Length: 343
Image 1 (cartoon, rainbow, N blue to C red):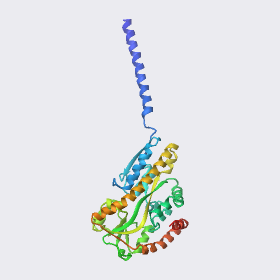
Image 2: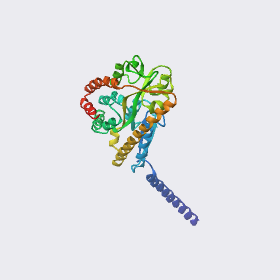
Image 3: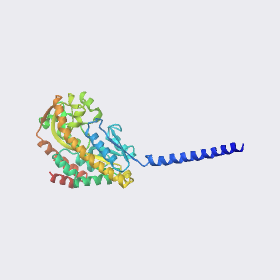
């Protein structure tokens, strides 16, 4: 009887020690393998095509950030968090997104009017001119303005390109007079709208995701964008999109933004990894845009679109006083002067 009781007590205490050991082992393993300290970055843009330069740039951001020794995971969303920039910026402010891509036209609506300077037609002479501006003193000044006027909601990580924008519509342009009365999908307020109104066109608002249908059904007579963007969406295959005139009115700027307040709370290693990832994304995205410009122009021609050139001088002359007026209104006359001096 005593032996049986002793055996039972031994087995009971042994079981307690085994359970305690297992419990301690699981707790220790969780501390070693868990990802509680991993920084998850949600990066989003509004384009849905997997071939779009935005997606290529974001994938470069993800690859570089995750390869750094900073315990970062990047989740890329291509239009799945919203196809409008207003949605993306709202998510950036609320913390539902960490890195987003937006245009000057939308940024100016957030109260940072100085950004409008980069969107006025014919501010930039060519791609090299654009790159020297955004990568130089003017670009640095604009980045500081974005951060200060947003109260650190927005921190600029880099300038992306969206190519050079051209007209495409129901008829080719032989002169500015051909725009008279044309329902033209572009910004409907601000300096950009003012410019196209001066040409005789009627700026008309259509969401990007609805533009193919808008061109097809005659909601608009024409639109404007760069080859990779409108050709990937097959706008050139509609009756109101198959005539392309190379107006070259905008060497397009896009802003890669992160929430500055959240960025400040990252570790030094994570901050450096994110800045390195941003630099890699800028290089990759710009290169991709340049490659796709010619490729998608040729695809448009192969698909039956007609491309013509036009004398841009009258368009450029029309733009100058609008540039001057808008620069004075938003307090960036000195920046406009520097941009012109860099041509």
